[in-house]
Structure formats: structure tokens, C-alpha cells
Length: 228
Image 1 (cartoon, one colour):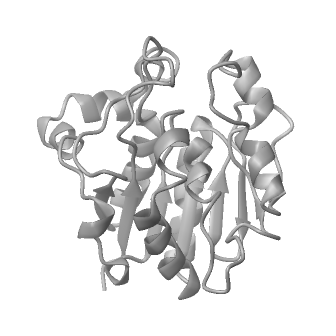
Image 2 (cartoon, helix red, strand yellow):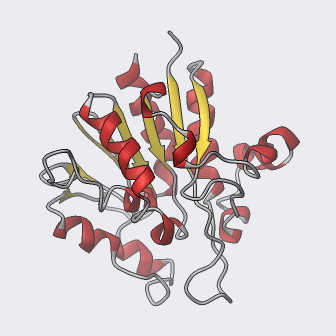
């Protein structure tokens, strides 16, 4: 049976301040997609509202704009996928072996309170399949509860974009909340790498998390290893 991955992307195009655009951090999707593709996995895109996915302008510039991201933007079929994503209501969680939350600051706004995404994530996690996130993607896990009412991330080792990285990226005044702090409030055993922006991933059972954009490839490889 071919394994199937549900990649989660954002619909949000700017911070609270409309003069500051944001969106999907493209390489976090393309690095993971490339790894999953190499393993022959089937992939689907879902977003909280369905439909169009904006791209984070900073992800389309050096040094973040690498060959996988460029190849995606040069491929009309791939770009069309970002115009027409599924909504959670279109998704049967039983069809997927893993859910992978991509990042970009935009996800801080529309991932946490998507009850549809929470439903899908809970079902996949509770049957022992893989739940994964990279960078800000962990915002999609912050408010997800299990059937017993406890937070999915409570007591779990995990990582995600660090507050120190928000400060270094000079967006600490723009972001709507401190995601690292919120994860700790939910009981997560949050970890981060010693050096900001370098790849750092954590696996705790069937939960796989990566800290920042540079962690997408390694996170996807760890997801693939669990699925084989």
C-alpha cells in the first residue's frame, strides 16, 4: 500500500498589520515534498479554509530560495496545487498515514483554531500514525486535544521556531504570540538546537517536529523512516 501524506499549508497573506505580508514558507513544503516524493508517497495539500495559498516573500529570496523552491515555482502544475487546496471538511483522516504541518508566520493565525485540522490530527495521532510539523507548523498542534481532553503535546518532547529566532528574524514585535512559550504552557517538553536556524529535529513516539526552515528535509526523512 502506498503511504499517503497530508501536507498542511496556510491561507493567511499578512500579519495583523496588513502592510507586512507573510504566507507559506515555500522551502518547508518543497523540501518535505521532495523527500516524500522520493519515497513514492502520495501527497495532498490541505489548508484551514481550502483554496489559495499565499507565499511568504522572505522565503523567495536568498538564502532561503533554493533549487527545490525555484523548481516548484517554475512548474505550473505545482503552482496550481497552491491555488486549489482541500479544506479539512474535504478530508477523511482515515485516508492518510501522516499529517505534516508546514510553516511561515502566517500559520500562527489560521492553524491553531482550525477545528477541522484538530479533528484530522487527533484521529491520525490516536491510531498511531504520524503527526509532524516544521518551524511555525507546530502552531497547528498547540490547541489540539486528544479524546481524553488532554493536549496532544502535553508531556511530549518537541521543537518548533524558537523565540530567540523570532527576535533574530526581527519579527518579535509583529507576531501575535510567543509560540514557544505557548507550547510550554500546554505542557510540552520543548527543546531547541544550540545554534539558531540550523537543522534540529525531535522524535517522540509518532510525533516528529523540526525547529526551523532548515529542518524541513530532516523532519521529512524522520517521518518517512517511521512510515516504512
